Length: 226
Ligand SMILES: NC(=O)c1ccc[n+]([C@@H]2O[C@H](COP(=O)([O-])OP(=O)(O)OC[C@H]3O[C@@H](n4cnc5c(N)ncnc54)[C@H](OP(=O)(O)O)[C@@H]3O)[C@@H](O)[C@H]2O)c1
Image 1 (tube, rainbow, N blue to C red):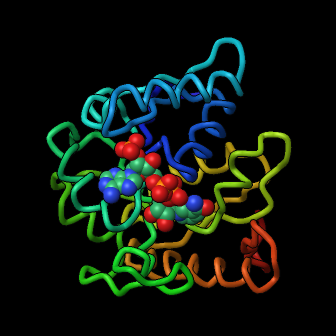
Image 2: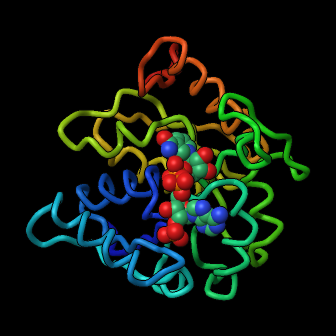
């Protein structure tokens, strides 16, 4: 495996913490980012209590976490997306890889989680591009997989994860990363503008969870070889 450090901004939250656990279990060095140092450290302790010996997880304030990382995963509510990117942008270099997990749910404006917002730039991931240093490698992933499934290390995750980026090389790197999670199959979602479709699908899945009284509805793309 390539020696690298991954920071999960918002890694104290449900989705980010699930990603932290899965990537750390796969052998990645992971930093949990938070607005608060103590909260980040507490979450890292919680992760290490689950992961056991030689735990590769630490906790730092978001800007320090971003500065120390080669890959930055953004996992915060859409309402905080712009501010959180602005808070770390000075610590991101063009060599870094930025992966956006954010879904523009209507909850950001007081609505429900079963509908999504239109984003002026097209998608949350494209909004990130506008705020990040030029040439930053940007991808989006992990939108259609639920935190409950990621956090339960005792079972495989049963869904596909669609990865979007304007760079084919970046998509390849992120797909390899995503495929480190047992049960998940990464699917090449093409250009970053397709992230709009993938992000909006999450609102549909939340509605399906409610209607079917389940917690982890996901998607599988059929007709393609792995
Ligand atoms: N939960 C899921 O199953 C799921 C599935 C697919 C996609 N997603 C998407 O993944 C992202 C994260 O979801 P989540 O459920 O993990 O969210 P969350 O638990 O509500 O928040 C994640 C973290 O973001 C930070 N945060 C929360 N509110 C903030 C605010 N107003 N300003 C700045 N930072 C704030 C907090 O970290 P600190 O307080 O430590 O800074 C929090 O622990 C969202 O965009 C969501 O739509 C979630």
